[in-house]
Length: 221
Image 1 (cartoon, rainbow, N blue to C red):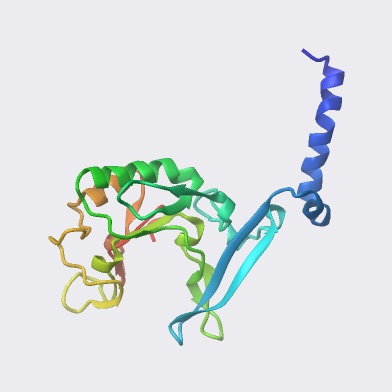
Image 2: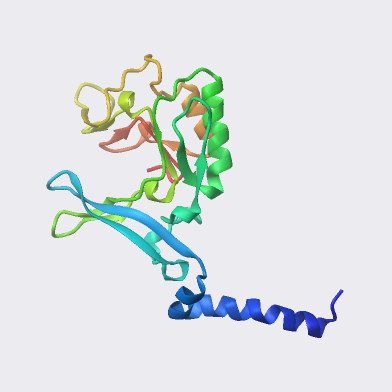
């Protein structure tokens, strides 16, 4: 065991590195304190399309509040995502802090014979929140942090004008939701059970005008 004095000297380089990374962004870039990389876009609510596609590369020390999830320790950075590979399921990525739980949930779904034809999680984009004077959304979605999963969008659509499930609901995205069909998510399905067991929420139970039957998320929206 090193004497206390010698141990302090050995730690000095690491202590100095910490303060450089935390306080000096210019020096941080030169010594590579950790990069954040991601691709993103803005949703134009007037034209109903994604615009302003861009690639972001920056030090972790320069992440702003919008780039950090308020419900977890996850960020928009690719470096904070973990790839999930399960036989018979399209590969996808989720926030690394929840990767084990999500993998167990999806494996349980597959083992029970529930077909997973498509699945999307990490996908960065400004598609949430208020709209600016140009009609652009101003907040990152839950998918941007890898804390949401869409399963079988082709048979579990997103509906609006859907305060109660019924004939007045209008399909916005994905395919028609038809309970009883293979791959359709309901409260009785193994998909619902598997994800709610790990503490995630189903957007088919959203209060208000939207019902998103494909969507599970950590925050519940």
